[in-house]
Image 1 (cartoon, rainbow, N blue to C red):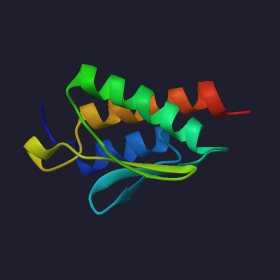
Image 2: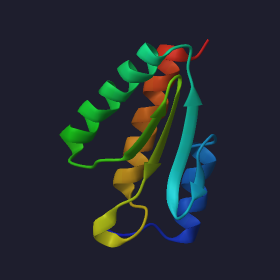
Image 3: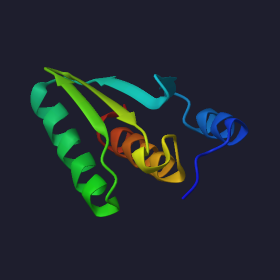
Image 4: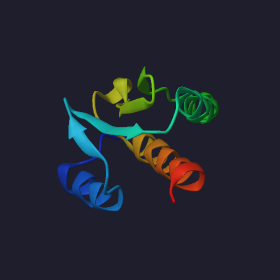
Length: 98
C-alpha cells in the first residue's frame, strides 16, 4: 500500500467534496439530530473499519461526530482511507441525507 501523491489526493478530494485535510488527515464532521443517531452511525463505521482492519479516529460530542483518517503504516493517506471515507459518506447519505 502506498501513500497517495498530492495530485491523487486532489482528485479524491474533489470526489469527497465535504472532506478536507486537517493535520495531514482526511477530516469530516457531521451534526446529526441526536446522540443516538451519532452512536448508530459510529457503530456502522466501526463495523466496517473492523472488517477493513483500518481504524479511524472518531470524536463524539452529543450530536456531533467527526472522523480523521490516516494510514499509520505509511505515515500518510492511502487508498484505504479513501475507501473508508466513501463508506462513511455513503452511509451518511443513505441514513441522514434528506
